[in-house]
Length: 54
Image (cartoon, rainbow, N blue to C red; front, side, top):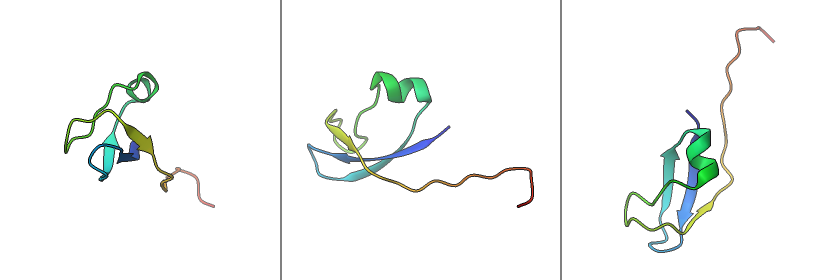
């Protein structure tokens, strides 16, 4: 499952959430620190691994 980085508008903490694509699209997530729903997505990095050699 993908991980997403957010900034909570309520407690101002950066959080990393592992969500399914459906949960992300429906907005079914809250801040684990304060329970706030005002999460703003942050630009994060990603890692991709393939079976083919480059």
